[in-house]
Length: 88
View (cartoon, rainbow, N blue to C red):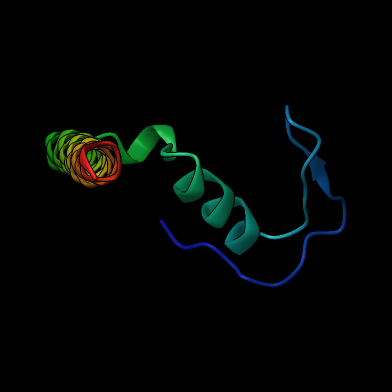
């Protein structure tokens, strides 16, 4: 199927209020929101979509781990400073 990238004569208003006036803008919107045209839902698309979700989940877990790790280091340093100040 061939799509023309020239602007359409009428713009479309999508559910969130976004206005698109060409297929390129529509493709960008769909890709940004993790969607695709109904003809493009293939086994390969589903596999890539699952891999993207898994990669995002791993990235979020790692960021959370780093946050808590840094927090534990900060708390350990502040506890040492309190104990040293009190022992003098």
